[in-house]
Length: 93
View 1 (cartoon, one colour):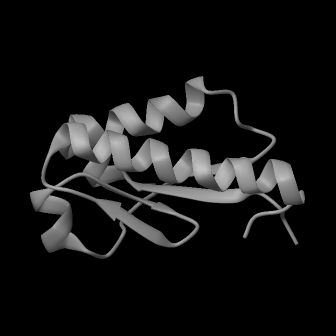
View 2 (cartoon, helix red, strand yellow):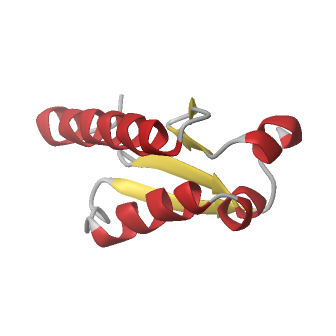
């Protein structure tokens, strides 16, 4: 069993919302290969939400907001929380 956090982004949402792309790049630039499996999925299956706002899944927890700045803030907060738990326990919660 992997002890990494799964962070998922919908390809369509990445194309549609700059904030999703920013969050995706944030994970890549933060050098978290030891703690994160970064996944770019073909479709998240939540098309209505995808059209309206950026979103990501962090260990199946749905992160979204209608406000771009708030999305990045919530995304970073949840990612930092999850990666801190991996460092402390040695596995994803």
